Length: 485
Image (tube, rainbow, N blue to C red; front, side, top):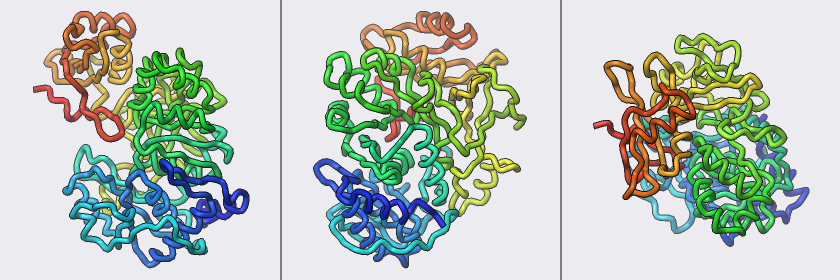
């Protein structure tokens, strides 16, 4: 039987029933109040097959997901910013019995057609006895759908416990920690790590609603010990630090600063470290795998890496033909494959896609390309489909070139892609948002800048200026939206 729920809630409630568990803005629930509200909601949904959760950044979302876990009912978090077509696909695919939402939330047509249950955070009810096993589904989280309609990754209960306990080991995460973040709650980062993570430890989470450097500083200066964010958030912090000594003091006093969901540019790493004396640590995960690696709190916070495999995670790099790269050398690029209790069980209603995602010996094909240092640190160089450029016989990761471009004073944002070239196979294209639109850097200057820091074959051959880079809700650059026409 799963050890995540209800074992987590009674233990925390018995130890400190009046300890704040969740705070969203001015609204707070203690552990005793959370147990009562989630128990009351769980009693009303135990007969459901699956439940959709309208995942606004609100107390009701957290209570709804905890209630579903208590009831042994899989929850399907819905992104409130999704379009009607995407929502209709997700609901048709997952077939939830009802949708849980905050009272007063206006739902678009697709979820509005379902039976609705308004989540009452002041409800009371007993925590039900557990009936779900560790391999039973806890969540169905839909992927971004960049290569087709979104697929529902079925995440079992044992994956939640495996990932959260591995992170506790890596980060020294305890019930004394108070986490602050402003992440959305419809994906793994904000929901599993950012809400269930603190609850698993018996700690507290303070959600900002909408992220701002000032909001993070306020909470860190008021007792929060950890900050979770995505690179866009840390970039805003880096930009604000020179004129905000209060922000610098807040970050300097934090126990742990964690970035994820995309690579944090080395330039922002260094700016934050210079202003605060603190290093941001990175971890690496996916919807399908939850967390795979992290820089450890007691390890070396090496900028540009995602650390070492977490306890219980097997990780290997493989060549194009699937042959494992035997000896990590810090240079050989391979696809990351992982195996462990942190993995999903498959894509809902997609046995073909599930079979294609796994190797014969049970490793998941991540599609992420990386190099591994001799001491085990992993450095991701990009996605196999969009960030691996094969030029002049070399395998080149877009990520390392992007990091170097961002070090140039004339570059505010940067993305790197490849495009067909009759001589090289692919040529490197740099897309930049200039720091000064009236005086953008030229191709020769940027090519020389890259060649001097990396290698001549990694210099961009084409330069395109943009006003802004296309990004998704998590701040990831959507490279498929960059047209070479």
